[in-house]
Length: 445
Image (cartoon, rainbow, N blue to C red; front, top):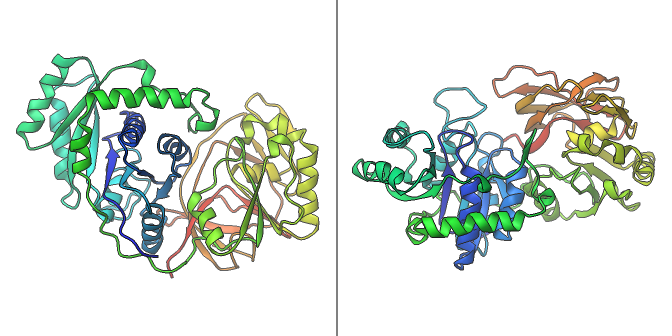
């Protein structure tokens, strides 16, 4: 793989909820309108924001994670996916220095700042100043000085009450040497709809084009886009090596569940399978489609099966096709939501039980939701779709389901980012496997 990635910027904020995603989407669309070919990326383990990035830029967005990905994987994704682009815009995660990993002093914790340090991309800081004035400058200065291995390129003020409000902050920023890039007004119609795992998916937001276009209009009017582009810097990553995929393909012909109930598949994993020569065959369980009968592997990604449990329970063709694939010896695997669908039953938030595929014994419930969140390091206990016995993989877990029954052999042994064992062990029954852990990469050898 050859080629130099285009210059890039990372959009970050001091905390979640500051408008980071809104600003990122508006920038991506506004810069695309100006003729830039924008390659989007997302810091950390997120499936929802990248789908919005793809709408804004017309290019697939890929995740970059300094904790869960090897350095070779990061270089491969940045270099490979940026081909043909003129500018990279990466969206951060949580607050600039925040991570699910607590080890002090590490620079591979998955935080936005860690990605900025690793790539050399300057940070554009989004500040929510709805209840602040000059204090916003102090916050920006603190972010700029907290680590000396990252650069704050400039600041965008968000939720500004008016020109007078912006004039209270902008000169103070400039006086302390921090570039002021503009201010966005406080407007309720910039908000995107949300639910329990984050934003409502882009594919389910009927007016997503109009919403992103509206934000881009404001961005173009309120920010100096040309100045912002000039602040971008080339990535300082080592050159990517030859194919060294995150997860080996589970088969030669992989039937991939793909619809609004099964939308959480990592693009870098799918790209790696294709590079390794595998063929991916999408199908829609919600449309009662069965996996291709020629498939030697079936992969059910995560998503929102709990919102479609009744439809999935009545999808006889889908369930019969899954059973037939398992019977003929295909490797059948489910991640998170897919794992729940392979189980015996799913109880929705109203307490109604829906029969699932029954290929595994797990029963899950949303009647009393409890959040399970964190990075995971796993060791595979038997040869299966995600790897050979003894393989060590990196991933994450994020769901609100409770396991109310199990009964199969464990699939893996898992620890959290702190090295302590966690309860999640997945399940395996012959060639059918599942786990709540979304696999991101294999552990560096």
